[in-house]
Length: 412
Image (tube, rainbow, N blue to C red; front, top):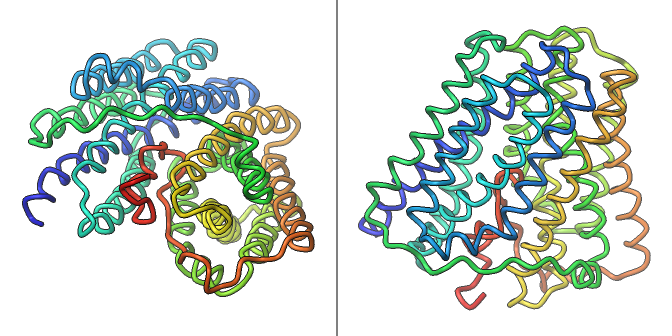
């Protein structure tokens, strides 16, 4: 087992650098843009552009990877991301940033798919669970580390753009010296919306709405913080709290969904997430303690929904459809993250607190539809369901990461 895991550790190190750079750069741009006076709509379009590129990368990058090979493709995409990180520090202009974010999203999706395919190639039935757990841990820790690093300096300087570029370049080194052999060619990704809806209407609607909420929050919460006068450290902490709260809550919420109708769990979590968003909108908390408390509650509820939605969809799918259903839901989530930042940016033009009104409407929509559908279709008996399993942050996941899930059999 040790000989199988050593090459995996170098790949995970490359993943950590990529995710840390993405966490830093993704938080830096809206904060610097807000300091430069960019409009909320243009800042929302940064998230829309990134998500659009990411979805397109998941669908179309496989052909390029097959043509030039995994190692060269990964090097090219990582270098492209690093160059763009440096360019965004030189070209401080909303239109330039929006266009460059499309390329960043595409390149990141391709780079993640290459690393995830490498990891999947190294995984065996004995090590798959361990590798999947390590990948999840790296995902959460690296993103938070990248975000929190921004608290140590001034976002109006070029320093953090340079650091982001360095992190992306460092991601090249572990894979360049890795002894892992090139994996099988990446598979084509297809989005069959009709099949996903037929399988589980609740998962279809809920995943789209959760994508809208998370896309809006992930892109524009830093702008909200800057607009209401929060310090850089407070904003970075606020963003990290949501991720860690969601990570901590995944297992308890998942175990609960194993014991009862998952739609009721979805409705309950989404309702609390929606009410916490409404509370921020209405109360407009001025104290850090109250804001942290509400944000923590929001993250614990909102960032748990994705895994439960996937589990619910697969309750109704055949055992050999896990990869197809989960991959389709991931891309549907991506479509939501394209919509959310644009809607959130427009509404924040009236008040920064309206960002949480957008997330609240999306979450309450999830709760309402889940309850309606629970009256129309019987739940799968508990003994016929597969146990819940956490899934890495969807914002950085690709269809290739689904193959790492222990529920994905080699035949899938």
